Each structure stands twice: as structure tokens, then as C-alpha cells.
Image (cartoon, rainbow, N blue to C red; front, side):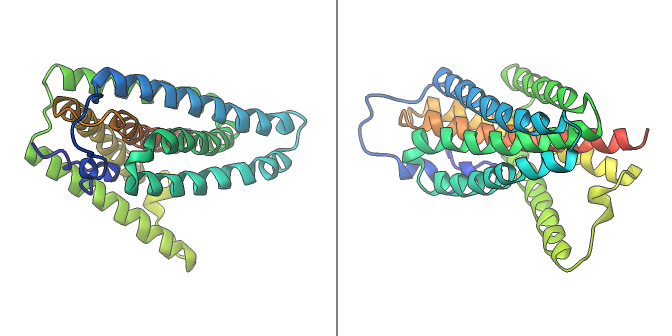
Length: 257
């Protein structure tokens, strides 16, 4: 049973071998991972509320530019901090009980600022994105638990390839942007751009299947208890990505109205 095969990068690199310390008296469970995922979501939500309120606390007085300048340091700090903590967690999973909640704080600060920015442009967009993210999550969980979608070897390879391809496109776009170039299909509202976003949302959603499978197999293999935090962290990474892609997709659709 290979527990390292997942397209989610935080579930690779022989992560279980990094925390295995011999006989385990306290082992990973599915319920434990679910509870810790819920706790991480609450932490993220509180942090997001901070930057959201900070933004609209200024914007309500009629100064969108001032609101963005006030929240920008928190947004940028959250994005960079979240990335750094995620890297630390990947390479040091035995400390994920500390780093995973910190990751949730940073991502919450980032998402709160980004969400407020989109909400100003398209009122009501954020609540629709949140609802769709939860909807997709529970649909994928149902499909996984019912056995309608199974994380077979071919399925894992296909999602791994698709996820890697999307990451490569985003990376090339980022580098090109540094030289003044732009990939219109990533940021525009053409039918092709919307279609691309739909594909990305679908791939992000299918990554949830692999995350569920990883947690289930980890529990079956009696992985160390600390891996509940790591499993919750990996699942949160996917959910954050899914929410951002749904937010992007909805904004493209709204801009066509």
C-alpha cells in the first residue's frame, strides 16, 4: 500500500517515512483528520473575517483605494507567509500540529483580502463562491464514500498530470508577466478563458478524491497520530485552491453580464 502517490504535492515525498518513529500507540483516524480539518477551517474563517472587516471598515466610508492600501500588507503577508509555512510543513510533517494551524491563519488573511476585492467588483460573488466550494466538497465526498469514483492508479496518474500541467501554465504566465507579457485566456472573459477555468475547477475538485483516499489509507495503515494534522493540511490546500478557482470562474462569468 503506497501512501505517497497523490497529485497533491503535500502528500508526496514519502511523507509517512518522515514521521514514522517505530511502534505507534496513538494512530491516525479518519474522524481525527476530519475534526482537525474543521478546526483549520474555523481558524481560516476567523482570519479571513479580520481582513474582510478591515477592508470594508475603510471602504464603507467611500474610499476603495484607501481600503485596498490598508488591507494589502495583510493580503501579501498572508500569501507569502502561507506559502512559506506550507513548504515547511511539507518538509517537516512531524510538526504539522503547529504549522497547519499557522498555515490556516495566513491563508485566511490572504483569502479575506482577495474576497473583499472581488466582492467590491461583483456584489454577492463571494457567498456564491463559498457555497459552490462547499457544494463541490460534499459532492466529491459522497462520490468517494459511495465508491462511484475510485482513486485507482490510472486515476491518480491522470490527475497528477493535469495538476502538473496547470501549475506549469500558471508558472509560465507568472514569469511572462514579469516581462510584460500576458496570457489572455487566464485572465480574460472569453469563452475559451471560461472553459479553461472550468477545467481547472474540475481538476481541483478531483484532487479532493485523492485527498480523501490518502487520509483513508493513512488511517488503515495506522499512520502516526500527527498525520491527522498533515492530512487536514493537505485537504485545506486543495480547498483553498478550489475556492480561488471558483472565485475566478464566477468573476469571469459576471464580467460578461
